[in-house]
Length: 245
Image 1 (cartoon, helix red, strand yellow):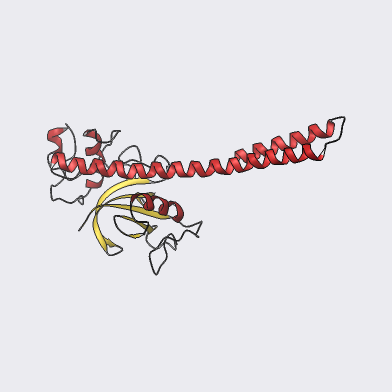
Image 2 (cartoon, rainbow, N blue to C red):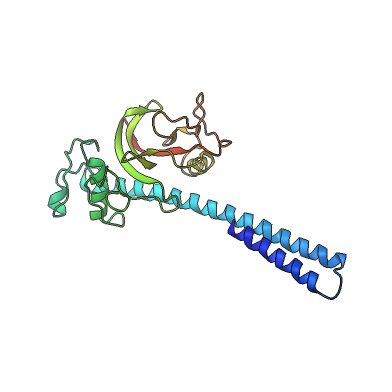
């Protein structure tokens, strides 16, 4: 919008300048001016499209980077981040998980980011403790850089999501302390899914669900669980499965 306002301001200044000139404006001069303005407007919209594409690529990179870190942690320490029962032996003061192969106990979803940060598999330092009502980006969890309202969590989902349970890296906006609410339009969620997985909202390893429970959100269709890109107001929560049960 700022680009378009700048263009319109330039056009108004040009009109005032032409009005103050001592000679008339030829049809050729007017045609050239219109052509230049058209190119400027087209370029501004093209720039907006390029910006959105860059945000999608960055979000894809975040999902793949954090999932790689989770898998590398499990390979190196023998447990998932958050579940490691001997974390304090590696890092003084770190919270220990219960070692049951599930990131599921009271705060293991928060321990996960603490363990990943202390192992230097991701950047940043995270407390592993509840902050406020629970999640606080930059304190005990990490938010998405291109979609800053989105906050990541890693947890064992034993309540089915599209008939699926397992460990998933979730990205959602915080509601009542948890990143369970939708935040991304279906067309953007589809763009990420198509790059990471198969472009289907309830298939493969990347899912998108409607927002918090009870929402009338139409990120995906009710009958087929396909993306609903025509909806430009409702939003999705994203899930990238590390392992399905």
